[in-house]
Length: 187
Image 1 (cartoon, helix red, strand yellow):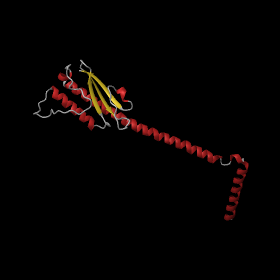
Image 2: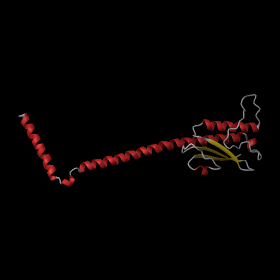
Image 3: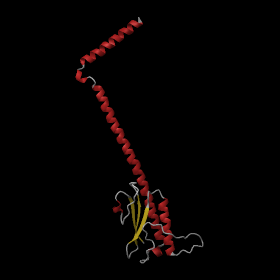
Image 4: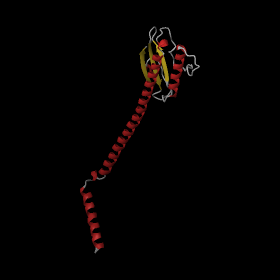
């Protein structure tokens, strides 16, 4: 009796499927497969878009860290200029101007003979070393002074687009896709 009722249910199920297919026009058969394929495609495009947004978010987060580091480095040099006010405020002094090269100087220890000029060279050396040791990709720091004034422009550049080259200039506007922080101080 069980096998007979099972066969009967299978036969009834087969008739229902057959009757549904017969009622469905031929143009609609397979339509569900197309709907599923379109849904999978839309889902895939959405997931790819989210992955792209995640990549941009990570890159911009790293750029934010670079900007913070560059801002701290520029502020450090401003503090060094203020600390050596005797040399920095002298209208004829160019001791704190640098094009990004790593000068020298040693003002450490009790035997160091360090006047304002030597302190300026030491400050630049220390600042350039800090930039080189920072996480800034290809970081470069420059300091310029407006002629006849005690106003200094401190620029910190880095390779933000990571193309292997850093574009430096007299302002941050000339750096195109590279990162730059500009700090102007009056001593």
